Image (cartoon, rainbow, N blue to C red; front, side, top):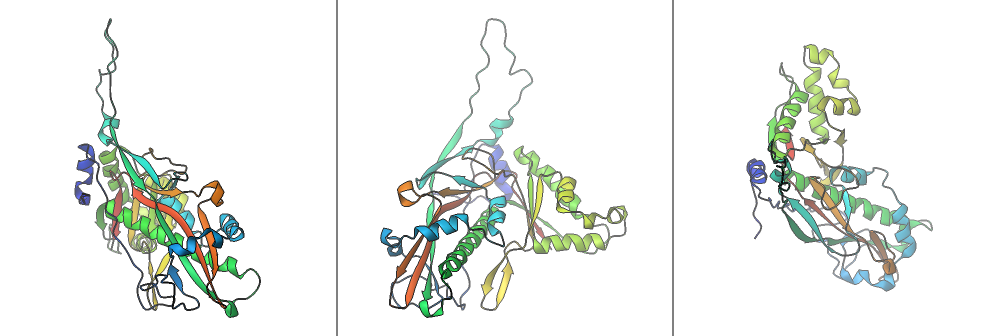
Length: 359
C-alpha cells in the first residue's frame, strides 16, 4: 500500500533511509468546451466533427496504422515548444520497447557517509568494505492517446492530416507537462513568500537561502529553477519598488543567464504555458509557483534527477519511434485520426526538491 508523506517530513525520511512514495494528484480539464473533454471517451458512435476523444483500443489496429503521418510526427516540432519545457522539468528516459522497467531508489544518506579514518588500511589488513544499498522499483509506462474526428467536407488542402496530428501532439505534450508539474508540486517541500512593494524585500535572497537548506537536506544542490509567469512578475514588481543598493544594481533587469549565476544554478526558465480551465477561460500551468530541482539531460534510470519522464518505444516491426498515428474512415464523411504513446512521469527522488509559493 502506497503511503503519502507530507512535504515537511520528506528530508527527514530520506536522511533516515526511507524512500518516499509520491502520489501524483489527478487532474481533469473543465466541462462545457468544444471539443468536449469530460465525456470525451471514444464509444464507437455518436461522433461529431472536431471532437477530440480519449483514444479507444479499437483505433490501434495495424490496418489503421499510418506510416507517413507517424514519420511526420517524428520530425515535427511544436512552434510553442512545450516539449522543451517538459524536457527541462522532467528529462526523458527511454526504457526501450518494454512497458515495464526498473528505476533505482538509492538511500541518500549512504552517498554522504564519511569518517576521517574509514579509508585507512592498517598493515596486514584489508581495506574496509562498504556496501551501498538501494531499492529497485518495478514500474511501467502507461498507454496514452487521443483521437480527432474530422469531417471530410471541412478539410482544406492535401496535407490536412498533418495539422490534425500536430494538434493532438500539442495536446498530449501539454497533458504531460501538467502531470510533471502536479508530480513536483506534490513531492516538493513548500516554502511560502510574499513578494510585494514593501520595503526591504529581496526575492533572490529568499531563494538562495532556501537553496542552502535544500542542499543540506539532500547533499545535492538544485541546478534548475523554473518560475511560473505570475511568480516571476512578482519578483520584478518587488525589485522595481525597492529603494536600496540591490534595486539600484539593476537586479530586476538581469537576463535569465545572469539570474542563474546570481542564484548559483545552471539555468533558469519561465513557464508561460496555459491550458483551457473553463469554457471561456485559460489558466497558467505553473502560475505563482517556483520549482527548484536537480535535473540533467540524457538521464538514465539511476542518476539523481528529482523527476523523470520514462517513455517506451515501439518495436522496429511496428515502425519504431515513440509515437504512432492511426487513420480510420468510420463513415462516408468522418475520419478518426489517433495518436498514441507510452510514458510515465515519476518523482524518483524527493530530498531537496523545492517549491516556492509566491503571493
